[in-house]
Amino acid sequence: MIITEAKLRQVVTRMLGRAGSSAYEAEVVTDHLVRANLTGHDSHGVGMLPTYMRNLNKGILKPNQHPELAKDSGNIMMYDGLEGYGQVQAKEAMAGAIARAKESNLVLMTLRNSHHIGRIGTYGEMAIEAGLISIHFVNVVDHGPTVAPYGGTQARFVTNPVCIAIPGTSQTKAILLDMATSKIALGKARVAKNKGVPVPDNSVIDAEGLPTNNPNVLFEEPQGSLLPFGDYKGTGLALVCEILAGALSGGGTIQPGNKRRGGTTNNMFTVIVKPDALVDYSYLNYEIDELVRYVKDTPAQLETGPVRIAGEPERLAFAERSQAGISLEQSTWEQIIEAAQSIGFAASEIEQILAP
Ligand code: NAD
Image (cartoon, rainbow, N blue to C red; front, side):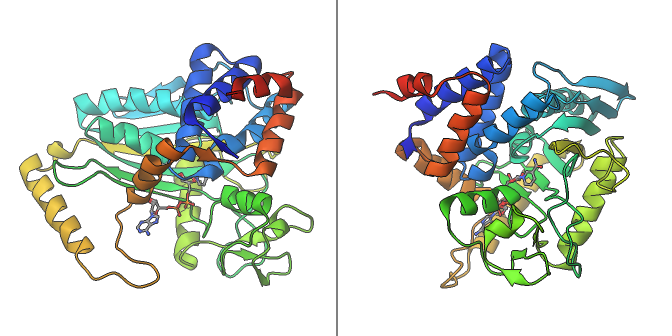
């Protein structure tokens, strides 16, 4: 089904409000999820709501929390997300760190113990808007592993994302590299399963460690695994995400001595830099403009071309989906309705909102 952005926002805001969120929280979470769909990342869009409602019903997602600044030593800010909606915890922690970085040029911020913070690019976009560079390493805990380390047949990590955001210039759009360390995000496999389509080659192995294109192996026992991107390089990055985001935030790594309640908890390690503390903008912007022009100025490969800069596919998807509406496959929609019902939000109320 195709649903307009405005109607989808209404459904999600009302659902979160019914699930106990304040109007503010419902709006922040809705905005994040709908923008994830608009930027082409359905894996981190409204299709996450069934997981959120399940965790809320289990008591491992707590509405209306604000991050607590557990340690503040000037350039180092350590927040605790108190198991609240990650979209609120990470947004507020970033806002605090951005304000500090504007004064002090450099901030290291950690966030632990937050429910799923969603699309990490959202926080890179906040830095870009403030004219700052941000670097984020994230791990995922309280959840069974889903990604096999290079060379292994059993999962040992979740999809530990990395994001680097660099503001644009008057000629060049912002650069937003925002990626899972697995070949594909788990949510993308969920979307493929719901659509009944295969996952790309070399992205998944079954429980025996054999390559497969069947996304179902990730959601049944014995469980298969996602593969890392870039072979051992992806595994290396996933490992350092565990230590930077998990151990240094105090939130913990995925090692099996830590709790696994079947939730989705994110920890994040973020560095924010004010670029003109290092070089003049005239120099930096000239280098960015000339570099990006050079990188893009090559004839396109038939299969993968033309050359795109990180962040460009999301901008293209946003422009298209804001006009055409958001397409949700039937089974994702059915799961959302079922999740709504689990918190007492009737399907008939949703139909009323959707009525022309
Ligand atoms: P992806 O593979 O679609 O894109 C990764 C990066 O590559 C993006 O920066 C994108 O702009 C860039 N890109 C895509 N196509 C390109 C091309 N042709 N040329 C140049 N650059 C290109 O993203 P993903 O790895 O599937 O991750 C999806 C989302 O999932 C991200 O927003 C990530 O933050 C999120 N995520 C979150 C969690 C969590 O625990 N909260 C875990 C994993 C992933």
